[in-house]
Length: 79
Image (cartoon, rainbow, N blue to C red; front, side, top):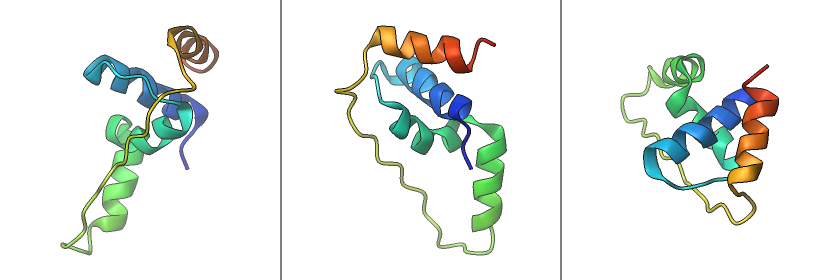
């Protein structure tokens, strides 16, 4: 399970890496790419299936702006 902080961190890191804003729901899908804990958990679940493929669909950010992202970051990452 992805925490709110991991979802927000996914948004922040994705914005930094790709200069694109995404909503927190998308950040939850991105979280395993940026969180060591979630990535290890996901890869452990897939280790017995050599045909496994990981696909992450990135949806737009029509409901997000820099002020919202900054607020989420302050609420969930800067405690």
